[in-house]
Length: 77
Image (cartoon, rainbow, N blue to C red):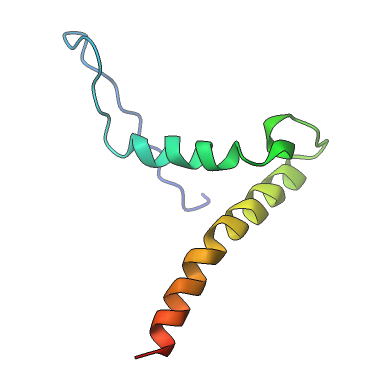
């Protein structure tokens, strides 16, 4: 309902060892970024809306340098 497409990737039982799952690295990288913010490492919030808002804020902070680079590059053209 929220515009999120959930895809479950099941591994065949025949495969053993490391198998690269499609787009899994994006999720793992994002979790690594979130780990830099201590408040998100524990569940301190009472309301899920507050935690969702904090995640939105953290990702906005993480994306600001990239947005500044894009805007600076667009201004020089």
